[in-house]
Length: 506
Image (cartoon, rainbow, N blue to C red):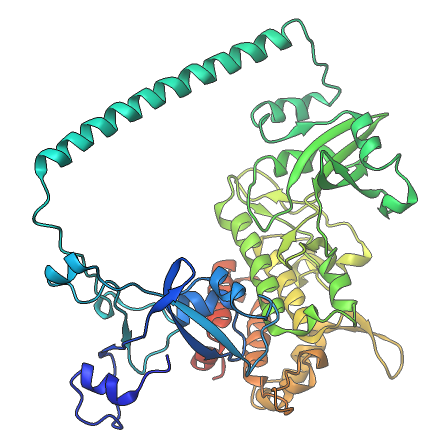
């Protein structure tokens, strides 16, 4: 925080400013506040370390003294493009006491207590934090305070009555306008019954609306054989024409709601075909994004770790928190879609099955090219499907993010097909030389260069992720990690990759 060590020592009663501070001791650091526009703050600088972003800097490094928005406004770096070794400006929120507060004995309006020599990326213990409250003004008149409360209650009551009258009038007007109108739903009865419970979320579109949205399904709007992009009332959408699995996919998507699962806006039936209207994903699929060698955003560990965490959170929700819980059964990099901000969302729920008792999840997974390299051994051998089947597929996706290679790729020597998961497990061997071997499998685009030109050693980070993926690829399903464990580990890696040595590098 650009503070004089001698000043810090004096404030904290330390006799030797150059001495080593004891662990877990609170340290008071004084900062110089000044006016900046309409805000009162102190400015400091921070050198960007490996694998961090504005969120971790604001909430973990500076413990909430600044915000992501403030960091973005005060620096030239974009949120997902921080340069390692670069220096950013950090505005710290602070304020000085007013005259009457000073007379009441308040010396500081905002103080920070920093636990010396402990990791700033970990959450402080309750014993390491203190909360200070301002002294109330003892000269405050209790009668005036009581009078203000009464006036506030009366004003609030009047406002509530006016709002109620307005809502009643609005509802009555709409009922009169819609009186006599009959809306005919041209959808299968099972979908209609499901939509009835969520009619405020899922919309039934007219075919003419979809035609207008896609300009008549022109080639310019075509994304694939039966998928088109369009715009409905200014909102970008993707329209998928399907004849199979539509009913089941609609039923599932209307029951689940999570940021990392693709959103279904509505449905339409026309000429024996069902049209599903999804949210639009600007960066297409993870598979295409990784293959774009010109994409600068794919060349950072930050983006790839965040994508892995997004996918893991989506599966964690399906396996543990959805009601009922589900097995996706079709996880691969082609079915993971990316927003313009590179947030990942899982799609393709046509094969998804509930894990509740009485429902058979051991139905077949269609043999498609996208599934090759992702199917777990127990399914290939006996058609057995559990949540650990999704975990295995996630392990392969994680390897794609680490290596930049496809789940099944061609050997440069003989042109034969190579299974990515088998190749990585073979290279890593028994783990004795893991750290020396991991450099051979990292995507070359992820080799981070310092501002001075030398390559920063990130083998330790890569090894943590490779070990995590191998924990998902165990042949025995019961030995694989759970999605809860995977999410927890990825969150720790995202916040502080250097702290995981004891967990994975043994």
